[in-house]
Amino acid sequence: MRWSTGWYGGSGYDRLPRSGCPVPGVEAAWTVNWPARQVRSAGSGPLALAVVGDCGADDQQLQQSLAAVRAKDWRALTRWPGSYLTIARSGEVLAVIGDLAGQQPVYWRSDGAGTWWSTSATALAALDGAPVDPTALAAHIALAQPDVLGQWSLFRSVSRVPTGHLLLITPEGAGAVRYESAEYEPMDLREAAPTVRAALAEAVGARCDGRPVSADLAGLDSTTLACLAAQRGAVTAVTFADARLRDDDLAYAVRTAATVPGLAHHTVPGSPETVYYAGLEDLAALPVTDAPNAYVVTASIKRAVLDTVAEHQSAGVHLTGAAGDAVLSAPSSYLADLLRERHHRRAWQHAQAHARLRHTSALTLLRRTRPAARTDLTGALRTAAAELRRPPRPWVPQAERPVSWTPLLPTADWMSPDVRGRLASALDLAAELAAVPGRLASWAARQDLARVGADTNGWREIALAGHGIEVAAPFLDNEVIRACLAVPADQRGTPGRYKPLLCEAFAHTGVLPDFVLTRVTKGGFNALAYAGLRDHASVLRHLLGPSSRLAAAGLITEAPVATMLQRAAAGQPTAQGALHLAVAAEIWLRQLETAPARWEVNSRVATA
Image 1 (tube, rainbow, N blue to C red):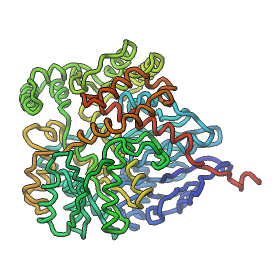
Image 2 (image 1 turned 180 degrees about the vertical axis):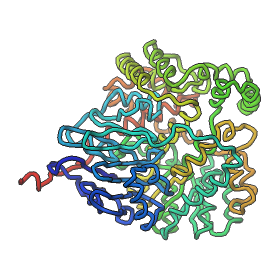
Image 3 (image 1 turned 135 degrees about the horizontal axis):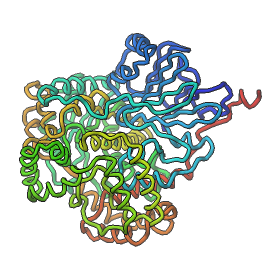
């Protein structure tokens, strides 16, 4: 696993990261398993700047940015294309800045001698064997909103820097400081479109740096990235085309590759093993990740795609459209914001259009939405806490429950009463500390991005461990997020058009064929999810059965999980997302038990 870490304090730190490489110019900072070309710096000593990862700034730009470091203008260091960690020292002040989507997360822990920081929570926990925090893990699988508990990480004694914040360390101590607005100044969709186009082009260009380039060629998002990359050189384009999916991704991919020069298209056929939950019998074959990761469930599908890429080019960078949905569209929960702000006519019009798409009524949609319009994040956290103190709910599909700022997933109903009570208390505490965003859509979009970013890290580990291929998700770049989320949710998610922001950004540019921009269909993996639930039911029963680590901690109980697995095996409607979260968390807990050592003794201190 790739990670970075550093120490702020006296010179007597007693540990060093195993296989760590010092970061040039920055005292007491190291990277592990990062290639040298992805670790660059400017300055040294009391005025220094380093970036780790895919950063689109050239060496001259890094040098010029030392002025921003001196002025402590931290946000200015986050505006380059790419996904990267920033380490900046200005005198006695150290700023460690991740990205807006959690691909470069930041954690810290302090003691009397100083502060360790890292992009790996598991590494900081391993300093003294700090255990997993069951309440934080309960929040992770019950709400799936990374910021819901603020600075709590999944480990006791390890703190997390929330989305939009940086870690600031001074002689007085360490803490998370907000550098990004929770909401952006709104911009009309048509006015924002050129900025979105430029940000995406720069994000793709930052990865087209001489490495072989491959890309998914499936939906509108991945097709856009593949076509942008093809303007810069040859692209190995791949489409996963399992016959069980019954979508039109392959038809559009073939037509696009025939139209756009530079796209060499290859089909990835399905097989009995390209289903969800395949290959979980041997957890040692899966790379260890820093947090529970959704892609362990679909690893066999991802590996099939990467196998095809590897057959046709040497290891390079693979572009994925992950997070396109989160930044280019919006769920219908934005109706709550329209109601709260008394845009009743617009809310009614949009509800009617959404209702037609969902084969329901506008009144039904608005009734589900109204409770969220009458509260804020603080109120929603307290409501969720109160619900956890009541008996578990009977299962109904999540789409039929009322809209909420903090919707409890079915996993919350599988927990023991004790765990539910402790999570309720944690949510009450979070409600007292929460900074209240003005709009539900803004909060939900940030949480979606943080969740996708963390999961993309897992996919990146799968690709690196098995194929030496870098995975890049340009829609998660800071400037792409800023450009897209400045457009109000009711414009991005307007039900009359499919991803209108992307279509407006690339209409009449020649980057994408017209038939791609007018596409209104989207593929889905439900068939492979149900096939995997059926074919691998025995493996799932073992993972989530009597030997389950989640069950031992009270994070799941046997009866409701067994019932849900029985429904899944019978092909009945199932809480797929909840099962997905539980399985990923169970695998992660088991892998922690055999995780490799992260630290070694600092012999210089040991012999002093």
